[in-house]
Length: 135
Length: 485
Image 1 (cartoon, each protein chain N blue to C red):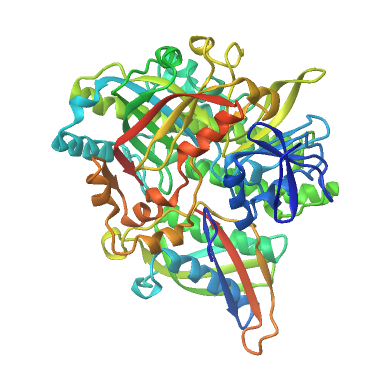
Image 2 (cartoon, helix red, strand yellow):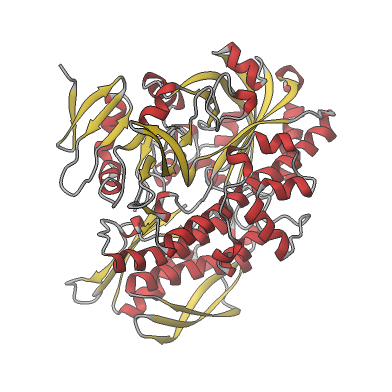
């Protein structure tokens, strides 16, 4: 999705848990295509939010932070714990390599701007999210 | 008869030359005044920036009017190119009204060199390579030659440029030529999270990516010889512009306090039309702590631009033996702070949010550095990397009508994805080189996203501010070397 100064994405998933996982993978895929990321390294992440929106924003900002601090690109996510207000996750991926993964642009933050999380009427993909990023 | 026109079914009436007013509607507590030509403002039909300005006008304690400048475009919560002032007792402060990149700003340096000294492409390319090498840029860039202790970081947050002077990165003149003398008062490092400090400790002295840049330019035209003389600018002189902010430290402060302000707003019963507009009363502990943390992030940004300046000075000394690289001025364009403004009934202390707007003090204002008091504060307005940038001086109407503010840049015309589409198969670097502009960038994507035609023509933006008498042109600058993240 296009925003004059920035960018965003919309996704659908069969469960709320899958929605959060797919959002993290979509965020990574915006910078480096998932299929060229190896999944040999593991990180663990713990995030809490006041509601489902703040959990989404904080979760995705955690993914951004892992990249900023450790250059970690996340390829695969497994939730050890998820209750709609808390996530404990194991992330598999690898360290960013300029040559192999190409140059990427900075994402300053995941925002609440027009953030929308909810349920659809569709039979298979019942949960959707719309997320904008500050670039 | 008053001129009128409509945007999205809402009537704007002309109140002054180049200024249009939307009277309060619905939940708006005050009016919105928009600076720009009718033709420029027609672009508001295409995005949500007018709605965003109306949302700001509905916040508690907001003072009349909310102002938008001609480079207005849609932001998060606040429109970019927006200014709003709040009453110190009844008003609020909004982290979204400052944005993620706290004290993103611009500084302009003058050199003793002339354009003719940099005309050979080989010299330009070598200079571009040296700057690219000495100023880390791009995603995740770090400075390996700068190690900060935690006490250093706390001093940077509290004192800003004062720390840089003590550590040999700045002169006292640099301090005098920085907005708020390089130190926004009230910063307390205890109000920044450990994570924000961590993100700051390894990013100080780096440019970042996106629209941030370092440019070598020359003075193409002088419009106001007296002001140009006062700023030390002459035709064909080589100058340097640095555009960057508080890096990850600022982004984290914004994220932390957006969460906290949202909870505070809920508790205080503040109705929020958009969660990015989360705001806390200026008298609340959240509001006070945010302003204190934000001041710390702003001080960090001043030092960030100063450290980059230090390395740019080194490059010019080593390559051209050019010693006197002096700071003309450094302005913030994403900030919230208390300023004294002359209003009907006397001087008033208000909390001004400038989101993509530059302070624009006129001649004889005590906030203008003594060296520039006769002509007004320098206003630095970067354009795109192919056309030009402007140096302006504050004009009389800014204090009277726009909370002492003017425009901050060109404003985007195309979204980043539209720009990438338009640039498919093109080499922006080669196109610019054919115009005599050497570009070094960490990645090709940034060059496509930042291509000149992705931006409005900055000359039109500046003209619209002049029509409204917020500022006047002093000089026009043309890029010759561009370093991008």
